[in-house]
Structures are given as structure tokens and as C-alpha cells.
Image (cartoon, rainbow, N blue to C red; front, side):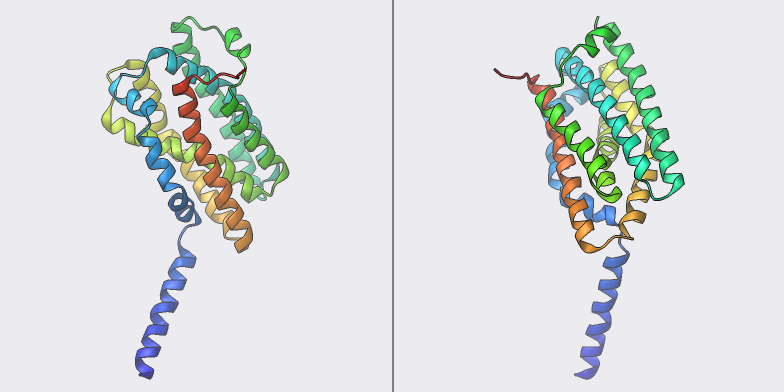
Length: 241
């Protein structure tokens, strides 16, 4: 009996040690996995893949995303200022620059082909979901600790990478939709995402259970906002009344 108890105790200890060593990002993904699966089934994304997405919905998305990216870049810069390591601050600031440059170039080319000027984008009002999501990001990175701010911005990296890989396997008959897919399935974007995932795991390892729990909840909320962003574009959401 003692031998059985000892064996059971060793097995339990191994399981606990394994759980402690598991990357924190694995827990984040598991918590938000149902939201991600619902995202893949959303008609906006299935329409990107099969080419059936109405063009006006895609243009609506691009305009709102351009507005979002301005705020996202600000969020990354604010988060960089709180980074506990100099190399993390450099990475986040560089991502802010690269994101704005790459996205603006892609959006400008597609939107210009659709007859939408840069001035028209600037004069567009953020839709309700977009305003709520960006406020969530900016408030979290400015008011909360680094680990929570990083959890808030992470879904914009990680969910887009996984969506891109999912869609690129399907391909799209629409050249503009395929260009959008390729950007998020590319190796350069994946390198950026992996850098932030490693940053998340390392900073979470220095935090207590309460801080990690708050980070999980914030990550899940941002993942839900990612879903709502595509849903917003599908509905072409407007302020009412």
C-alpha cells in the first residue's frame, strides 16, 4: 500500500510539475478556443475563402481596420513604455511601426482600387464595436500592469495568424481576398507572433496566480472582440439612432 501511495504521489508530482512547466499561452488558447472555433465559422471569413463575401462588406472592414490599426499602434507604443526588458520595448515599438506600414500599404492599394481615398478613411467614424475594442486596448495597456496589457493585444497577433493559416489552406478565388489572407499566413508575420508569445510566457512566469488569472480574462475578452469585429463588418454596423 505504501508503495502504491508513493507511486501515486510521484505521478501526481510529475503531473503538477508538467502543468507548471506548460507555456502560459497554452492556457490562454484553451480558454478562448470556443470563440476561435466560432470565428472560423463566421460568414465573413468563410466568404473570404470561397470568394462570396460581398465587396462592400470587405471595404467596410478595411476602412474600420485602418482606424483600428491607428489605435492598436498607439497601444503597442504605450505597452512598450511599460516593458520590463529593453529588448521587449524595442520589439513592441518595431511592431507598431511595421504593422502600420504594412497594413496601410495593403489597405491603400485595395481601397484605392475601390475608389476610397485616404481622406475618406480619415473622415469615417469608428463603428461601435471598433470604438469599444480600441478603448478596451488603450485602457488596459495604460492603466494595468504589463502582463495584462500584453494579454489584451495578443489576440490581434495570434488569432489573425491562426485564421490566416486556416484560410490559406483553403485559398480564395478573389485576388484581393487572397492578398489579405497571404499577409497573415506569411512567415514574417508568424515570426512577430512567436516573439510576442514568448514574451507572454516569460512575463507570466514572473507573476502570481491572481495576475495570471486577470490576464486570462483579458485575453479572452480581446478574443471575443476579434470575433465581434468580423461580425461588425458583416453587419456593416452603424451608430443608431
